Each structure stands twice: as C-alpha cells, then as structure tokens.
Image (cartoon, rainbow, N blue to C red; front, side, top):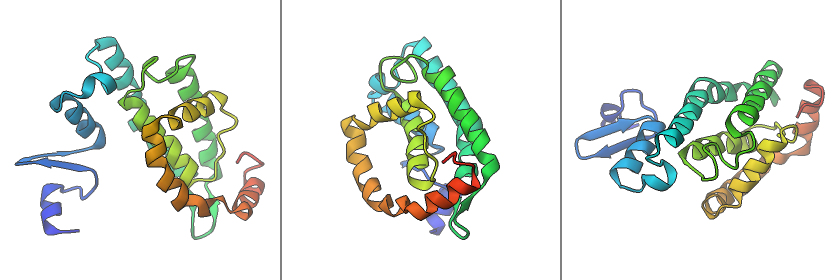
Length: 185
C-alpha cells in the first residue's frame, strides 16, 4: 500500500473515492454520492422518500447484520472447513431477507432494481463464489438472484467471476462439508 493511499484513507481499506481534495470512504456513501452528484441516481436511488426509506432500511440490515455474519460461513482454506455455528445465523439472515425485504416484491424497494439490490447481490454472489453454502432452501432468494443475474449488467460482471471461481465447485469439498453440517450445504 502506498503512502499516498494511507494518507488518503487512514483505515487502509477499499473503496475510496477521490475527486480533487474531496475524499470519501465507505461503499454506501460513495455510491449515494455518485448517484446524487452525477444526476444518474433517479433510476437506482429514486428521489421518492418512501422508496429511499426502503433502500435505506436494507442498508441498515446489510451493514449491521447480513454483511458481518457472512464471514461466519466462509470456508477456511487452511482446513477446508466452515464454521457450522455460522450456518444457523446465516439461515436466519436469509429468512429475514426473504420475509422482510423481498416478500412478494420483485426487488428490495419494489418493482425497480436499486442500489440496495446491488449490495444484496454482492452478498449473494459472495455466498456463491466464496462459500460452499447452497441457497436452495430459500426459493425467494433463488428467484431473486436468478432475476438479477439475467440483467445485462450482472451478466457482464458475473462472467469473469464465474470463470475465476470455477475451482470452488470441487465436489470433495461439498461432500466433506455436508458431513460436517448435517447436509445443510
């Protein structure tokens, strides 16, 4: 990490946005800033207060619950095992996502894809690519992920990820983990 980057971001984390002397950290703040400052936000972050409230409600869940708990289901590459206790928490989070954030809606804020869906899809693609957890117990999430992945923006971004992480689907991992987790994965 360069000295310039350390001075720009004392946390030494990505992402960081720098425009002239203005420096902004944290992905949610950055994406909202881009939407508002570039006047492109209406589609993904509408000015409608009720829609923004639904989006912001998901961000609260995402940052306080869903994202922090994601690490509990990641596989430890040193021992090819995952934390079995984390599966229950993750399952609870998925149930909350299905019931409280999607329900019968097409996307988190209704019929339109928003920045909340970008963050949620980041979670689910992480599950797909960096864990061995299977989401088939959550049909609403599976349909949601499928619907999002059919969007051209996700097809374009997802293809290199699919190729890069194809090693993850080693059947032996899944069989070992199935035994450790009573078949949950």
